[in-house]
Image 1 (cartoon, rainbow, N blue to C red):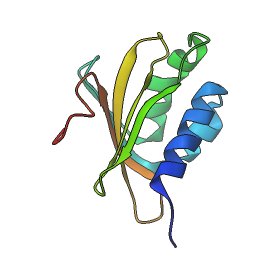
Image 2: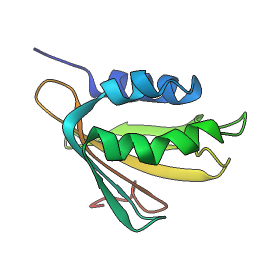
Image 3: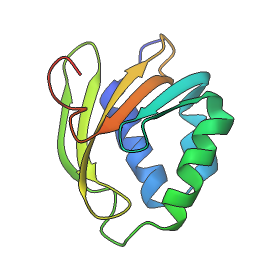
Image 4: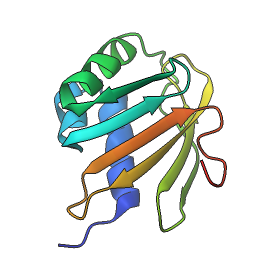
Length: 115
């Protein structure tokens, strides 16, 4: 099955904007991982990733989750966007063969080449 990674990232942003944790978690593989440079922590599996995102979605400022830049380099998708706090942040997404997010990395340098 083919999927468009950019569409998945747009769906991710829409779920964040709508504060729809159920929809957001449906985009992640059950064994997905998230590394956040800001907290210097790894989150493993949907339950830990949900624990990471739930308070951030609840506290999101009105301008949160707006796209600044979006790029598919063939290996991963890089997204620069307005964070839940209204600050510019970067996220890189890697996908499973079925189009689920299998790993993501967020932080101020996550969109740099080789991140």
